[in-house]
Image (spheres, one colour):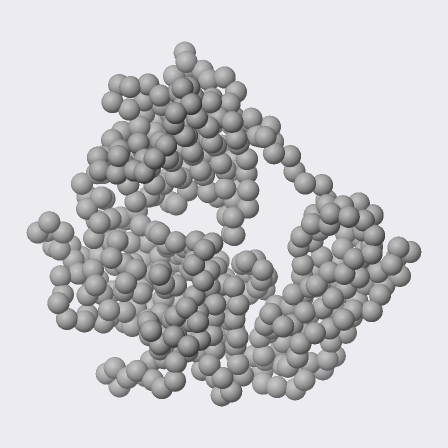
Length: 468
């Protein structure tokens, strides 16, 4: 089972392999698009070792996948025996360059395992250039390193594609909040609301909507007192329907707060009374609680579900006290594994990681690493500790360079919309050389880690409990 945190020692076994790939396969590749051999709409072609491959693209579409969009181009060879699959990842798609080293490209060709050709960040640099794209069509070129038959690195050159999109956007619904005459209906409020206590999946508000035209919807409230309610989906029928809005955020003050609901141009409102509590902390990884053990449930790569929880007691090293987060498939086996060993102070978050699992060290090599700073602006960078590793008898030093990508921004992860998130990027370096291995983590205020993407997995939060 994969684990949540990149720094979890059992997940970094891939890094020695990555070093081998990086240092043994680093070459320069040109991207060629021969003007004298244009493709018809819905076709692709490329060369490897002087052999020409070509075929049709029968499926082309853009879909949403968690935090990124995916552009899929799928088809078959001319003789129908091989499958062609090219996928791009990005926040949006415009003409430009997309690289496997930046987690933006994967390419697969074949009809069995191992594939005839497999290109990704793990196998070397593979580059796609989108030359044009609009609502109807996309064209481009591709080339780079692919693994042939799961064993030999080869060059893919003169790759070209041209495809018509065969999906149509869903219509946007229309209607009003409340009954058909536009009169607001009473909202049903679920859950408890206390100053300083983060909203959880039980904090919901049900509102009534009268749908005039089916289609997608986005119903939300203004952010009030540090809290927002929202829902997205699709209405398949017309008429009066109930919609559940999920709460997110942490109440700043006690007392009554009014929330204005928006659906298209229609507006209604409801009030919530927040009980007196403590002012919310500025904490992007809440670990301590007086009333319970904070816990988080995650889904990795869309299939693996697992549970993490703060464990009782502390872990003391050199007079410093750390909190241990356990990991398991459920609440009963949460002590089976360790997701992380953490401490915090003055807006800086530390992880104690055992680097010995991918170095030459035979004994534990625990090195404290700063993984987050919540007291610095976006764009701030810092370097993790230098760690030795030996590859094919060559001694190297490497470290992780951290960058605050965005700070205090709203972000939707899975079914949750978090109003205050810090996004952190990690890049693996040897000295001043970027080794092309990237990672990303999102920390939601008073919730913790809600999203992670690394060399082998994408992880999103499914549920959580944060206690006062």
